[in-house]
Image: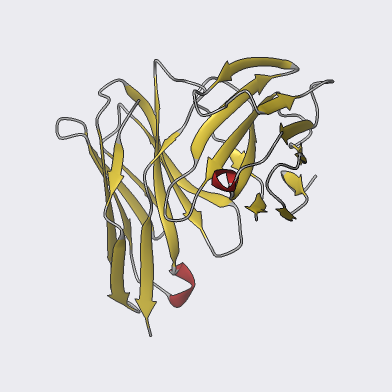
Length: 114
Length: 112
């Protein structure tokens, strides 16, 4: 396993469309995180899974956003009725071990909403 | 939420040392991390320091932590052009152990 992978790497969509991103964490990692990064900013936490359970959600995660990790392995992040303000890099990270342990990041999915 | 701040830009000559600074507000920090992000790439962990440490050295990298002033720095010795990237500090606290709070990032430019 070479690391966290994300698919697609780039997504261009029209406002109002739904999009779904996938993250495959490092295989033995039980913790999975989603972050959003806009230009000139650091990543902002969106949500966190431990195994298949979604344990934390940020206020940034509006009702249009939903994340799943059905079998405790890969995760999907869906954005419904996309808005131009959703344009950003969506980063996935995974970790194993105690709270605060190092997070390994994927390359991200860059979303552009026209 | 936690507030983590960094200066936006730093420019150094190749071979010189670089010092990237970070300040944070939450005194209950547990771990503080430094990540590097190159264009089009994900974040790569460089090093981290636990909050009960003052200093950590790892090859060309030296991390200094001043808990009293809530100040973290990353020194890169003998900076190379390949070090040009954006550097983020990140904080994890006792209260938010599953969330990393990132700074805005410092863009380091190394001049040949």
